[in-house]
Length: 181
Ligand code: SF4
Image (cartoon, rainbow, N blue to C red; front, side):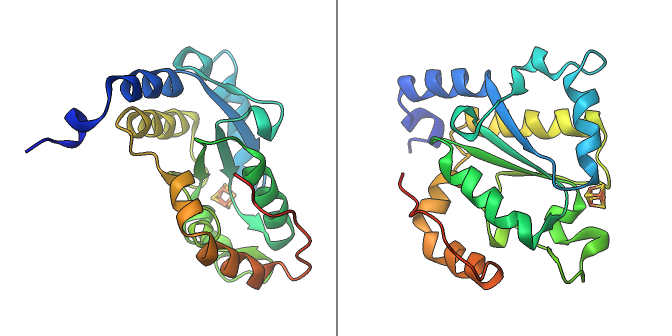
């Protein structure tokens, strides 16, 4: 029997190696955990040595990093940013708030499970996660990319109806262009 790895073409493996080695990150600083991003990216932890660096716009980004709780008001902007990114693209949910709402789990103005609205590839748990945890989360994403298993962008396309239904429950004034991949 041919396993997953053998069945992938050599060109896919090379492309995935290049992708995981050069991750341009759009950091959406929604929650307090965003404060850990500057030390992660600057000289002390120097994430760039692992190929992780900032992107200026969604169209240049590979990874959307959502750093903590997401207000219902911000959700629309995050969806719009994600949908402008080119495929393949990845989402990292950063901090307990993205997993289950964390300390804001019953707040009236935040969502409490990011994966109901966006296709998360990797979660980094903690409140707030330290730079070591952030780098470990990126390493996990890189492993998934190399293995051809970072498939959130495909899940989003294949289950758009599910995501749209949940998104529209939160965003009542839905005036957005169609998602055109
Ligand atoms: S997980 Fe903790 S640090 Fe991160 S946004 Fe939530 S409350 Fe803030």
